[in-house]
Length: 155
Length: 217
Image (cartoon, rainbow over all chains, first blue to last red; front, top):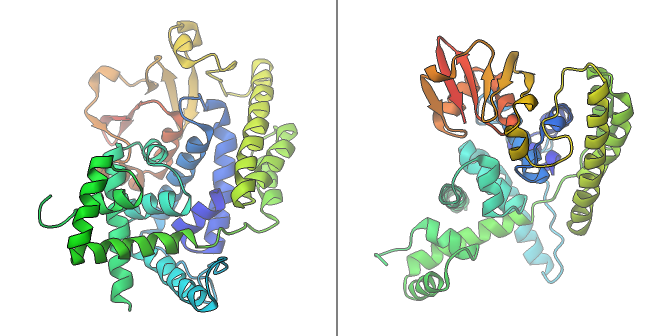
């Protein structure tokens, strides 16, 4: 959860590892101040995202490409029910979409990552980002549509 | 519906976040509008690709590194070993295991919390737990004796029950109110990264900054 989020926000394994360490130290430090107003899960997500934002803003957006050092996006092509050809196409799409995430503005990337990668509900995302559900809906939509446009351009 | 569906409607349609009436309207529109149907299919492909991205496992040494760094940052050694085990659970991702991990981690952290409360009552560490028995914040807010003092982001904050107010700052003189996640708040945190810590408080904070009094909500 935390490492994946950090990786998707930072774009590098090394950066994600550093961020994860710092986030858990922060969680530990603030644990006594968790007051139960939100769920622990959304509270940890919120601390994680805030730390990613503040840390990355010092380095300026956009970050490094999400592809690994060898240029390969980490993508799990295994999907029962798909032919090898479909799996290869899915792998390619995954690699492209991982890279295209970097082209999104941070506010759209956050929303898309929380929804489509972390699988959170609109309500949870609204709580984490401290915005209204309508704003969450709009950011997710714009993020997805921009990714769609990037992927269609790259074809 | 106007000429074309909005991207918000298409995205919400794919997430099944529409009412039945809206859903039928979109489906009807998609059946007759090639442009919107193509756009919707493109968004569906994006979602599918994102969901198939591999959930990455952190390096195996990360748990130990975090525990070591926490141990170095304080003296609460007894708690770190338990935290370490909760971290390892939190970071092992698999669809079924992650749900199980959240439950276990919650239990471990609740345990940590109760131990920490016990320690805080006896120790001199400057951490004040607002909610030692999870009795609900309202009851504590109503009790002036529960007013707390924190040191966050290099500032001393005092609670008046509803907000954290920096020591020496008059809350009646707030010059600017910034909503969390607003562009102005982001810009402020970009200039003062330490202020991101205030978000963890889950309550508005009133602080002096750059010759003005700012309320961060």
